[in-house]
Image 1 (cartoon, rainbow, N blue to C red):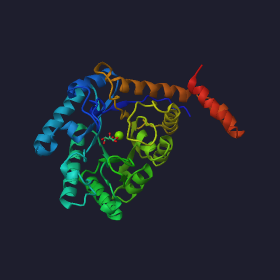
Image 2: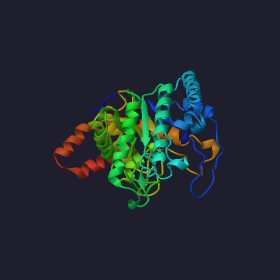
Image 3: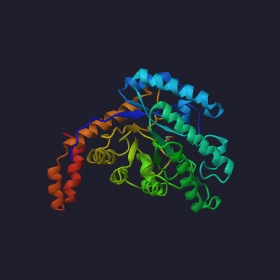
Image 4: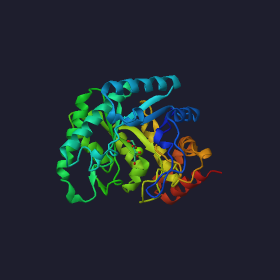
Length: 346
Ligand code: GLO
Ligand code: MG
């Protein structure tokens, strides 16, 4: 099982967040992008992931020429720092024009905006030197199911993906499913939905997925199973590791924080499938606790990476032979305890 390659790590500027939640304001002052980039380097990360407006702030007010100029400047800054751009994602949930959804909005003008913005996001990805665009379909769903026609929404999603695929023959789209929040019910809640949707597009081989631990748990699934499923299709092109304590708001806790065993099984699944061998990054979509002081502001990122690497060692040192023996004997009680003892260590 042990496929000994080195993993490459990534996070986004939004993962050094200021602590606001729906009930209260920020608890830490905002930091500049340049500071965040320096911290990323200092922590030993290899790449940064971007929203389109992380790369080009206030993107909607800027001309195409301006967008190109700013994106190229950013590319230079990343090159100077020796940091890769992992992906770019259109932020389709902030604008008043995406209030009722982006590609599935009931308003045709809003749908047009969402598609145009996605095409500009692809342009940014090109300028930054990545062929990966991530689609977290934040508002593609409903607060009440009667508000939209579900069948039409599937057609609209496919049409939007097709326009993106046609805009650039090389771009790959990774759908990041999430079953709820901000919506009551999302149209693409799981990896199965994402990969099925890919099949309806004009170029299924360029539509894959991104698994986020917390999102899989919110869907009632084991993220390790989602990893195995996506990788059986060769379609896991990115990953947002974090953790989640049960069915509540999206928590984006440090990797392994809520359930070390579930984290261990994700690492085992990545190892057995050779995740990262084709240049895929391990990204942490984690946030500091709201209570975090400025001087501890990066701990959730450093800790997630450390936990991941320690679990890689745990996965590689797991006694597979003994485990297989117990499986053959159907002695799952012993197997269960063996896993716990292995995780607890001496
Ligand atoms: C929120 C998502 C979000 C996306 C990011 C990239 O629940 O996890 O953080 O990953 O916006 O599109
Ligand atoms: Mg995410």
